[in-house]
Amino acid sequence: MFKIVILRADYEGWWLFEGWQEDIIRQFSYESETAMKDAYREIIQKMKEQFHSFKEGKYSLLAFFNSCEMENCEDCGEDLQIFYTPMMLKNGELIA
Image (cartoon, rainbow, N blue to C red; front, side, top):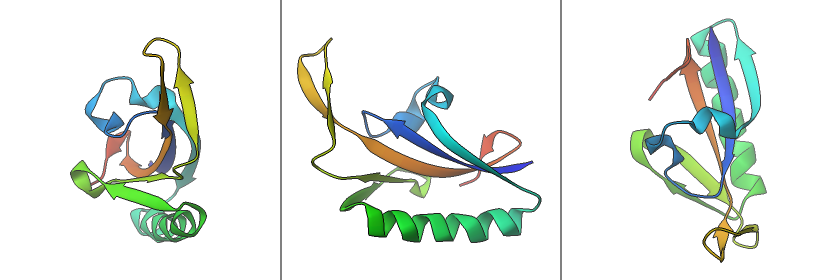
């Protein structure tokens, strides 16, 4: 099964930590890898229009953000940037 998931996290680099699946806010399923890749390109384009900035991380994953979207971290006492990252999965594994 082919999927695109979009994650929302208060730290960039979430893909380096276990439990990232808990941050999934949307997911889309596709019958073929080609259909998924076409949809991924469209999602990336829309996110580039929707968000002011993005960072490219490991595996060429993009973390989109608007600098004004922050959340307060009660544990650390700071405001943290919110990031949104789309990623492609095949049978639950990242396709880089």
